[in-house]
Image 1 (cartoon, rainbow, N blue to C red):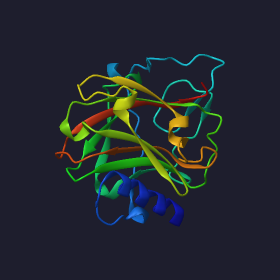
Image 2 (cartoon, one colour):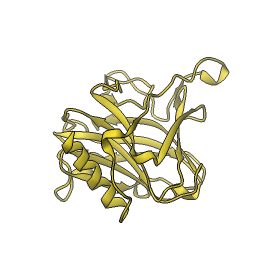
Image 3 (spheres, rainbow, N blue to C red):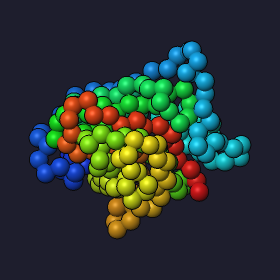
Image 4 (cartoon, helix red, strand yellow):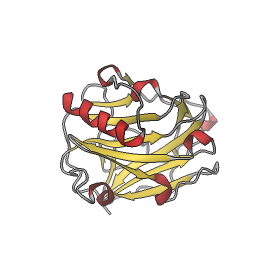
Length: 217
């Protein structure tokens, strides 16, 4: 846990000059609820539907077909909401499955949350992180997607991979090699496979997130 706390502190420091003291031990956790029944619960296949024979890894925010899965169990795998900067809610405005996740800004100087694993896992066999975003609110004009190992955190500018703050869905495909480049994270010992960071914004600014998975190509 001390190593994870250090990784979080490094992550925060890299994105905001002085966000205040980290309280990683007491971070809130998030459990994604089922969107339930009704006409809006029809399952969408996603912009790139899973095909049998493909390798696809879900890590807790994906409802589509996959060959492997690391579910959020709040025992060894967690979603941490950093320092009360964000809340997550289900939304039926989605691109796959029954629901997406609505990321709601708390109005602080930065925003962050991430998927964390108690034990490091090997992602060396996976090549691309896929995720879809939608927002037009100023608090999400700058979005970074991060990944942590035990000692390092690397955040990549989402606009370099197709994200636009224009109110439309954008489907990002981020090579894992970009997280490992220039002495970056160790892909064979990852503690946080997905972290989202945004800058300062008004309270209640929103971003929709969906379609998060890894592929081997």
